[in-house]
Length: 494
Image 1 (tube, rainbow, N blue to C red):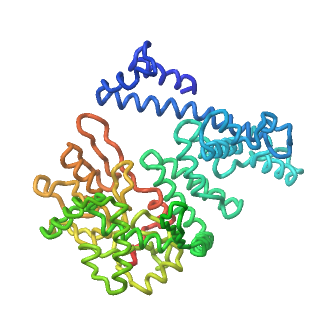
Image 2: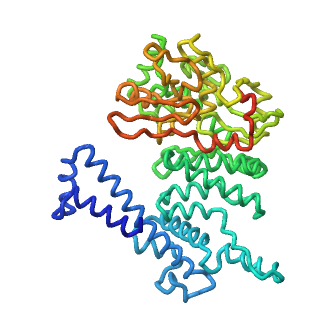
Image 3: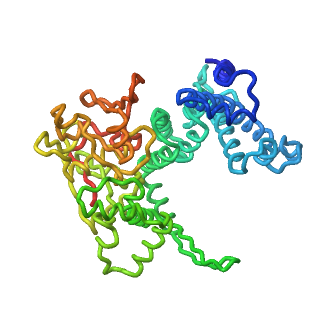
């Protein structure tokens, strides 16, 4: 659909919902009277309209930035209007934050760089180089577009929001070099993440982009890991009001460890798996009823740990599950490591860090069948076994519900075939990981999940609304890239 045709369609949809006589002051009263369908239709139309208009603004920001380049001096567009930078000009015109103005400029320049008709872009430089190198050839090859061209194309056609585009491009960074294989690998990763974007939050896309980049560039991953380690810091100071304040800049391993400690202790407050044992239920309810805020509980937990030190009673501090960081390492058929990541949140780790953790903690091997599904047990067990829970976490990476970013440690294993009614089997390919909230919503809200063989899981909303596919995360798909057939085991470091 043409851009302005789409914009006109969304304006018409909003006019049908509100009428022609609505004023800005009428909006709260008018929308408070909307039913669920009308409210959702309003949010959808507004989001589509804003995305269409944003595309115009982003291209304009890129052109303004090109016309404000430094070599133009005082004749540059921004400078002519009295601004130091094009971002400052945009901020003055639009009223957005400095960060948002800089993002619009960054995205606009990226879009123009991917347009072969624009002078000065990568495509033109490649074309001129080819012309010099091929002076004895009558025709010139088609200029090669930059690796991020698929992102720009997706943004312009409305398949990506500006926030999604920015998360993917900044997460993937830059190719190791501009050789063909590296360029193609980064472009393929961008395409994969574009396809995954409809089912992921911006935060998930950012994490997955970094994980895929680290897999494509293991040497760079090692370097970035070391750089973050060197930047680790803990600082205390007293502000002007006499309040003692602190700041921690974490390195990767320490951040994962502290997050695991906090989540293990506060899981009942933060939507973790339900307790089964009656004593666990009481402890969990006590924590839910605690009048302290989560931040206050986190603070008190930190000091409990400092006081207890190395002799801390794990059950007294953490509850029933002691905090730990589980690392998943994918091994190919020859026994060589391919990639590694934390089970929660899928943060990638370099092999040196994994080797250190294996030396310290050992491994838990999880066998898989030839299609990559681990450890089926049929109907011998009613509940998924601990090893199966590990396998589900490896495969799903967290709650599989569309748009949910809850980590694997917050997950509950759901049988998509009901045990008694459907004769359900406790098999990995008939199980899926859901956070507590979405697991309860599924059982009590009329939702259901199905799967045809080994195809994607399908989430069926109540009523006759169409089913929604629940594809695996792009970072987990990328972890298997180039493995054919799948390796015979996952090997998570406990």
